[in-house]
Length: 216
Length: 216
Figure 1 (cartoon, rainbow over the protein chains, first blue to last red):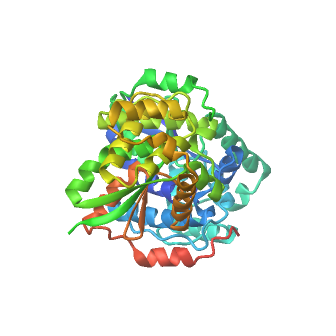
Figure 2 (figure 1 turned 135 degrees about the horizontal axis):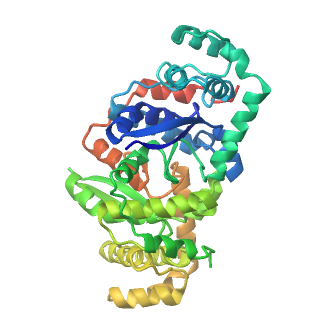
């Protein structure tokens, strides 16, 4: 039986890229079908009052090394886009505009992620996006132009809001059966869940949730 | 040859507890000697303008489950202290007051961590701390009373400031040879480092650091 879920991501996140590169195999092994859901990480962080790792100087140094350590472990070549963080709005909207064709959408997501995180090129400009699409997919319509229409802009806002309502606070987040798995480093937990081996202590969870959590 | 380093922690963090429980074996296998450094996580988060995971409603739910999933994976019994977060100042100061005796200090850290995260008891009150010390260590001085002296309070502030200067932005953080490993979930990276197998892409790191990182 195929299990379905969502993959919430933003191109600005190298951890989302790491997860993206690993998900094909994981989905195949576990008969999982994930629908890609582009969301604006900056909107999500802003909603919850959080900073991104690149916004805290000490964390930024750790974060860059950490990403490159994961890349080394998985034997991926990675480069940070210059500049990073870049403005991902255009890339997210192009992905949404292609959304009616699932296969095409996957190809576009892959091309955009690869351009940013393997080739080290930012995705901020419409011209860059047009280049990438020209090089990688054979399109009959001008996706970049279409992605700048009000309905697509609105769709990205709605999708980001929906993610927030569902408890998403960062990317990548994979949601299956209402369970959230946040971070490339939690794909192991997702796999245990898919294997029916997610046997943590439910009583301790309920107890902790009902504790008022005030400092005293 | 013995490698030395520091283990920055706060009792309020369940991830610090998870790391503490796993570090004995890791240190033995890799001939690593870690000096425990109690620090006030709230001070570190405040300095960098971050929120703790328990302060963001959606993240708190994820965080509790996540901790219990790690506990299940390691086959540890864990319970959240009630309430959580609790005020850890007294517990951190007691640990510092015992600092002149390394063996005793380790025993006290272990007793405090166990009380909070296995028995689910908060560590906010001097009376609770006195109980724990009476039950677990044989002391000739009143450590709880001594821990409330101005020099101990000042020592905790200094140690927290030193951690911040060294780039610590969360706990647990393990520092070896100036390298920081943040989180129970990065002990794998620490092990690769100790095995001389920390071969990530230095050029990509320098490139990313020198990128100005502004959104454009």
